[in-house]
Length: 120
Image 1 (cartoon, one colour):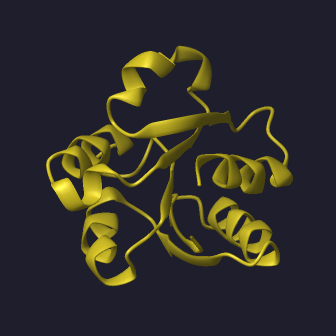
Image 2 (cartoon, helix red, strand yellow):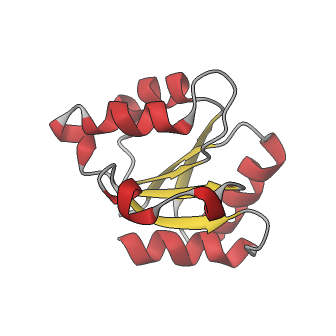
Image 3 (cartoon, one colour):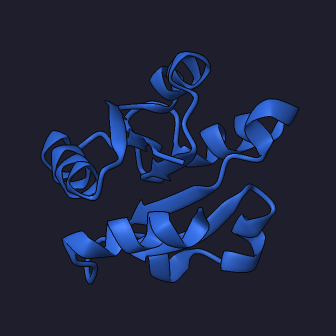
C-alpha cells in the first residue's frame, strides 16, 4: 500500500498533506474536487483516499456515495480531513468506507501519516 489520493480544494493544504505523506514513502496525487477524484481513481488506483468534505462543486459526501456504488472502489479506505469533524457521526460514515476522521482545526502534519498507516 503506497498510493494516496488527496481530494482537497485548498492547494496549500493539499501540498502540505502530500509533503508529509511523500516523506513517509507514500506516492500521492492531488485533485481539487470530487469529479476529478472519480476520473483519477481508475488511473491512479489509490490504496487510501484522503478526503475533505467541503469541496467546490459537489461535496465529499457525493464522492463517498459514488465510491460505495461500485465493488472495485467500495473497499478503498477513506480518511476524512475536515473542519466539520465535530458535526460528523463516525458510525454513519463507516458505511461509506470512512475509517478515520481528522479535524483540520486540531490536527498536526504527522496526524495525516498516522491516520493513513492506521487504515492500511
